Amino acid sequence: MTIDVHGNSVLVASVIEIYRAPGVDQALRDFRLPEQLGFGLVCAPVMFTSEFRQGGWQRGELIPYGSIQIPPGARALHYAEVVFEGLKAYCVGQSTPSLFRPRENWLRMVRSAARLAMPELPESLFMAAIESVTVACRSLIPSKSGQALYLRPFMFGTEPGYHVRPSSSARFMVIANPSEVYQTQPLRVRIERREARACTGGLGEAKTGANYAASLRAATRAMRDGYSVSLWLDAATHSRVQELSGMNVFAVVDDELWTPELDGAILPGITRDSLLRIAQDQGMVVRERPLLIAELLAKITNHECTEVFACGTAAIVSPISVLADDESEYVPPRVDDVAARLRERLLSIQERRAPDPFGWVHVLTNSI
Ligand SMILES: *Cc1c(COP(=O)(O)O)cnc(C)c1O
Image (cartoon, rainbow, N blue to C red; front, side, top):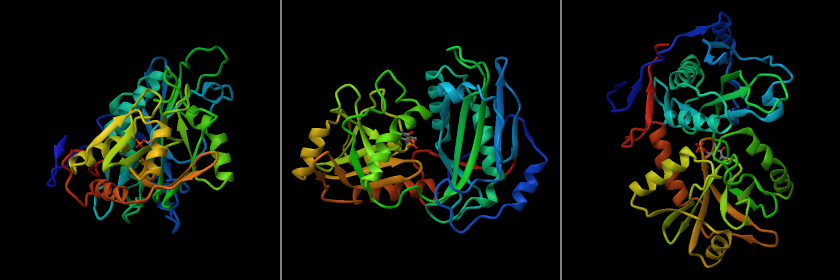
């Protein structure tokens, strides 16, 4: 690792060798970036793939984006052996792309895979995969503030069979999407009082498809009723706030920043962690604590809680304009005040518009 003139660490491209398929250059040449990007709607023309078999990872390959073949009996399709990650490559007003805290994504993917008894992914393979896709797609990383190349690393069990034991083979892939910010409107949140998404001891800490599957019915109902997303409570007592289906939550209470403590059922978001550090750096008192839903709603009502917001890589920081319970709606007095401040600080570091005192930004060289 070397350090560039801005003090950012530079990841000098992959230490492992990657096969670049013949069609890759043509696919890149043929690709046109559409005007409207949305989030995850546009697929980059190349992807990375590597297979795990007989106890080892095979050579990584950069190949044109396209459908893949897996056996219909693959355990991923039946027993949900799937883990994934999400991170962004930024190239706003810069000639070289950068990644934000990519090692945290690798560490989390390893932890998620361990929870599902899936193979361990070497750091070198993970980094080589995201670096090679990012560098190959360099010219299609959108360059307006808020835009980025969203990278989606994922791993799934490919061995067919119904025996309840871990798949002996797996595939690790990275696909990418030139994207805008996921969510721009303030969120209208429905408190989910009946169903549960994740429990302590279960899969909540793992970034895995099953947690999303568990959230879909309530989310669909919430959307039907005019809300954007569900707020999940703990599975055992339905009294403690967990998070949204794919974002962590924060509340501003008496000028302090509160967020539910990681209890084993909450996904440890990298944006969550970054915001806690930034808020502290800005002199705010931050508290990771159990947050009772009754307490939160009471504090919104008496205006001790002035603001609520959500965060994640895709949406960065999303203000919440209303929390809806079965009978009533709770409206925090402020929307996007502290949230806007934190978002701008985070985004300015991510986009290299501001100094990075935390050592979070990893600049890529063009050498793959
Ligand atoms: C990915 C994810 C988040 C956000 O994590 P980041 O690392 O900040 O992107 C929050 N909750 C869930 C359930 C997630 O899957």
